[in-house]
Image (cartoon, rainbow, N blue to C red; front, side, top):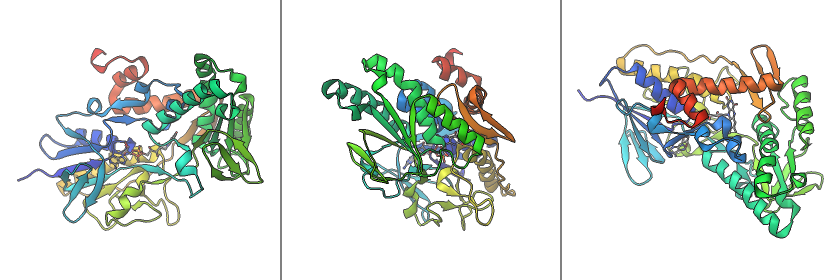
Length: 401
Ligand code: FAD
């Protein structure tokens, strides 16, 4: 009898943890597992703001996928998926190869939402991937170098669009990282402007009043200018145009105004709702028995009206359940219903401050920042054990520990 073929698309939080769970759950020789990702590294999306400002070493954010998986149990293919044929059960890769599956997991993550605002797609810098945030870092350094030639202040003005969690994390990181970068590049830090723009009346509007006030206070103390209740109307390579005839001359608009599901899945003949792949309570794509989807590209309704948000926390809770259900499907056993338990959320504002809520506790200050680090370390521990934490923080190869 031929072994069932499990194919996982995407090695972000959802995909990599599912493949690690399958390594534990499957008996030797029970199934062939192939993990496909367009890069050969897995990156910590929740830490990408650090790559953008250069406050973390690359190895702390991106790690080799072949080193994270067990090659005896999981085959890794570095390739970009171009389409899936659900009738012939084939995944087509850029370059022409086709990989067939019996069970498919689609965990292809998110795309940046630009809401069709003119010039944003072309000119704004996106916090989307390891590569896109490296581009932000190079943009900052490039503007520093050009400033030394023309002394144009717009080159030293860094604007972050969006005052949600990602936006304030980016603002805090700029305030943390730019003084050192300025020193390295001989730029007077006092000439730097860091500006946050938010359309809602306050930053993190979905949080309690005390958290909002605390966040505003921290941003103010760090000389970050925050413009609220103001929409961005257009972005050009030289400026950002806002409501009320405001404009900010800048070469660097960093966009963090929201995400949508990866639109690549729209043309594959799968059901699509709210731009995402709707799944049932077992994480199977609606009307399908052998295709699963988790994370930001999927739509899981927690009740009749509300879907789960696109967060790492959701993807990470879905992954082990999804792995169990794939194995149960192969074995003809009953499937487990996915239940989400919200554990809280914390956003850093630079290294020494954070804001959020865990359980019933409102977090802020250094304790919040410490909790944020604990959450990240816990993920690394689950992914690769203590040796991965040591490697990430001290740059030691896993074989040495
Ligand atoms: P992803 O992690 O995006 O993984 C998708 C993978 O698919 C990637 O590896 C990508 O390279 C690959 N891929 C995409 N297209 C293709 C293709 N065509 N072919 C092959 N491979 C492909 N959530 C939290 O819970 N807490 C936080 O503190 C938090 N902070 C965040 C901070 C930032 C800056 C950002 C951007 C997001 C943050 N989030 C946070 C949200 C969280 O990162 C996402 O919800 C999470 O990454 C979703 O996981 P995923 O597995 O669905 O997708």
